[in-house]
Length: 421
Ligand code: AMP
Ligand code: GLY
Image 1 (cartoon, helix red, strand yellow):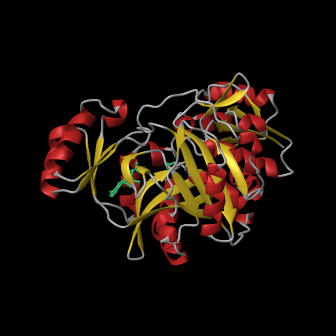
Image 2 (tube, rainbow, N blue to C red):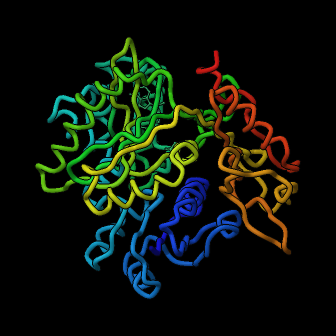
């Protein structure tokens, strides 16, 4: 079959790598891709948020399945446009993508099905929002309602800080995303991510992971897109996963179908777990990045069969073949990230890495200049490995990271600390 993947990050490199392991794949095109993806697949320049352009391109290339990586094309309705044109698509409709694109929508659905999550208020003006903060007290969480590239969440320690965040959001600091604001109870516990495939009806768990959002060791410093991840997440035990499915995920999916917007694709539930009880922090309508890298490392070739079954509405026949293994990915980022950083520094040593189904260097923000691989983003490489236990996966991932010659980059040295103790 001919497959088109949309996206350009480490997540899409990992998806491309897994898809290429499967003998079913005859041709793989990634748009727009990156320098690492270009080594294993054809890359095409395409505006991936323009559904018409993507459908036209897919038609010309005789594509059988389109896998959509990031949230922006999903929220823009690219999956709808492709489905209307008759393509099998892995990814939700724009209506269902509101589970990520609108926090108030998700909170309202959770309330309708009684899913455990933080208590909240939804506001369209600053005065009412501030009154709510004053009544609730701090700590409290202030969120821009719309997509804000992961930056629209302020954890406020004091009511004053919450009031300032409210003024910023209604003042336009997050553009249209901040025109409405959700204010939430601050939840305590340990966070973990739960990934399931959904074909409108059947919900199939495909793995758990934990990310490291802060840039600094010991989870300090500013938030990033994620500095490293591992799978499985020990805190998401089978009992906790069962509760999350029964109390949160399945009821949400049933409610989406009931409202005429059945969900299809991967659903990523960010959970806060305390005393064995999961509560929903947020849904994302795509794989996490870098969580996808560890999931793909563990699933390998079957990832394509699962995504195809999902896109074709056959998840009830699908089965995940679990290996009793662990995977870790360490993000190599450009010096200065998540603040300002330089682009264009040369990365050496990549050709000499020994890569196989246990050790892979996925590219996130890379490009080529004069025949050499250069950094072209904040998060640049993902040293990814699996092993019989997390320690073995970790040793391999860091060995891979350390084999790269890139003076312009850095990584956290403590990925996995929570699980390794
Ligand atoms: P979100 O964009 O909703 O995922 O929020 C980003 C991060 O903020 C989450 O991964 C949590 O670490 C934190 N967070 C969000 N909402 C809450 C909450 N209600 N209580 C505690 N932490 C939260
Ligand atoms: N790593 C977090 C995310 O993809 O949202």
